Amino acid sequence: MTENQIQSEMPKLGFGVFQVPNQADAKQAVINAVKTGYRLIDTAASYQNEIGVGEGIQSVIDAGLVTRDELFITTKLWVSDVTADRAADAIDKSLSKLKLDYLDLLLIHQPYNDIFAAWRAMEAAQKDGKVKHIGVSNFDNAQITNLMEFNEVKPAVNQIEVNPFFQNNQQVAFLQAEGIQVEAWAPFAEGRNHLFENPVLKAIGDAHNKSIGQVVLRWLVQRNIIPLAKSVRPSRMAENIDVLDFELNSDEMNQISKLDTNVSQFFDHANPEQIRRIASFKR
Ligand SMILES: NC(=O)c1ccc[n+]([C@@H]2O[C@H](COP(=O)([O-])OP(=O)(O)OC[C@H]3O[C@@H](n4cnc5c(N)ncnc54)[C@H](OP(=O)(O)O)[C@@H]3O)[C@@H](O)[C@H]2O)c1
Image 1: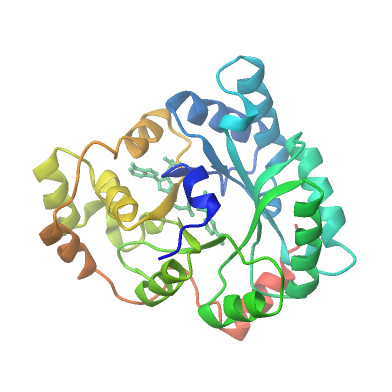
Image 2 (image 1 turned 90 degrees about the horizontal axis):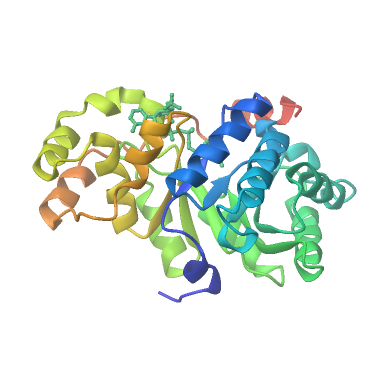
């Protein structure tokens, strides 16, 4: 596996703010998360909370809790901005809402619309110092290879769904062999399929005096996948970051591998109905 620069810069796990649409709540979530120890914050234009996230970042920097360079801030271009004439402006708008001079990571949120034009705008933003790293989200192996083969900059990250019920093994293996960092969205599958009551995960957690959530996040960290856990509750924020002091053995890792159903807990990105639904979502 090749090591790219971003892998040494990125925290081992991150904090996501999907479904925190209220700016005041997003601000408070970011403040609490940074106080808890998170340094990677994952937002997106479509989450409609970049203003609150920016206020939270400003607040923790002003309070002297962290410096800008200790934080790793990610946002994403929504599909309606993935065009030749809108991408550059959308990057500037996100920077302005987040009150930042630069982003650590900018992703194309979904593999639809004019991804080549957007990628070239992102390459230009990187050259201008507005973005340190550029990457993608929800791209399959063919889509990311197509992008890599015909552009100058290789995506640093692919943010994809990975959780115990959808382990995405083939894709993870491909991306890791390419030296592309994998980030896991919905590491808990948002609790679907009764994840937080799963008996296999519970028994493994009991053996380490850890919760089911901590077992899941540890399993991802041990696979060199960066989990993006979301919680608006400070007690769960603290629980979810406390996963670096124990190790799952190979038998436990194998037990978790067997939970894979190889079916997304959310949706199939290749389904035309799903693509139409995403295309119609205006941010
Ligand atoms: N690129 C993409 O297309 C994409 C898609 C989805 C998500 N994401 C990113 O990934 C992040 C995480 O995904 P997600 O928010 O969809 O789902 P998730 O992290 O799998 O699940 C979040 C849910 O689990 C609950 N929870 C969190 N920690 C818990 C714990 N220790 N015990 C019990 N329940 C717990 C949260 O509730 P409370 O908040 O009430 O604690 C929330 O309802 C997002 O915030 C976003 O940054 C990206």
